[in-house]
Length: 117
Length: 147
Image (tube, chains in turn purple, green):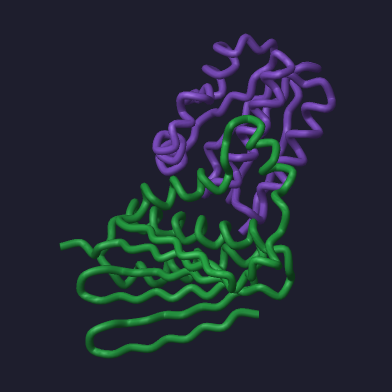
């Protein structure tokens, strides 16, 4: 059970975060810490690539909601990219697919979020 | 430290696992459940649903405990009708932790973290029953076997 994260910062106000593995009660504090640090750097738009996430539970959802709230309060956004069918289903059954902007590809997210690369 | 017991009789099969009530052990419970569900012709999605529901039940305990000594006992019982999984913790009322900063932040955002976990369990398995007593909480998850 592990979680790896790699961030790219194409501009001062944009961050693309690639996460891989399992986001659960054990690993979600690590994701939360990264999101808080990213927001504290002045980043307003975060795109999280979920295509390599194999497991996501309510604590992971909670961290993503917390990040979304923090960024939207700063006139930014947290968008999600490429969740697999299992992860997409979790967003659908909780109704969170209506709260988050979820895109199929990173290119689509970048274009729709108006992110300058 | 984990403790696993396996027993079988002609009508029912029971697998019992006891883990420390700590975040790093929830994955152990999920892996065990993966093995148990492999004995039943559930679909891939059903297996993943059960795995997530058990993870949520264990997380519910981990998030509430304020002590290092609490444990979670996961008892899986399979019969011809259903797989029932009982997730029992021994977190006494006095040992409960205060809500985490994350939980408070989510509450401010109008999101109930425990409620999100309970919602997932309700949707993922056929029946969910939660019993709370002064000595701990039991979550009973039932998933009917395919006909």
